[in-house]
Picture (cartoon, rainbow, N blue to C red):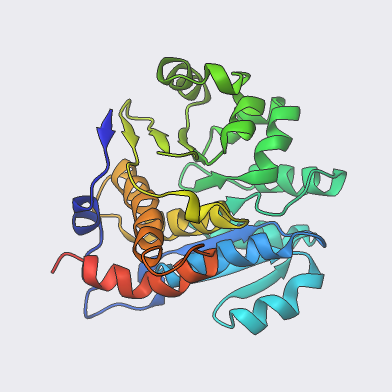
Length: 281
């Protein structure tokens, strides 16, 4: 198992070409945020924008549009119940995020089915939060999901639901075996997060701490992963995922020297500066 160190940032984060435009840095669509949990998808969207994705669209409940645009005028909005617009936006995107705040209702499942049906082999899809729970309950959808490049980002209880492995039995061998059967990358979020890659490698985070134990932290990580996947194409998928996971905790660890608790919004606000000082010249 490889320990992720700070040199991964210098390897992945490169200076932007002088001749470039917003389309040079990829398109992300984030899908989620029902009437109760709009903050989750807003944080994921915010993180994707601040981590450098060129164009970001948030597909969410109409009730969230005012809050989204008040916090993040850089993001576009579509109503996630508008199947035609959702299909069109997914088709144009490089990276699809689904799950933060999506919920587990019949409507949530319908949105997940629409999303999966619109995927192609050229897409990355990051499956997080509620979408993992929905897939655990509707396993027939897993085979359809495999058309794309899949990244699951579960915490330990979500991984138990999806993998069938009880939390006490989630050892490296069992986790990797299940990850391979899913044909997906798995970012298993916990103290010293483990990342199981489709290339057979396993990475582990060695930073982070209890100051990160607050709502929205995983949603923020999801947005950062999306941004890194769509813009740093000069390096492998595994390196992009590792770098995103690392910077999320590295920023938090830096801020924790002066804060008792680090909020997801604190990390998001610091991302642009941290990426600047970490880039390869």
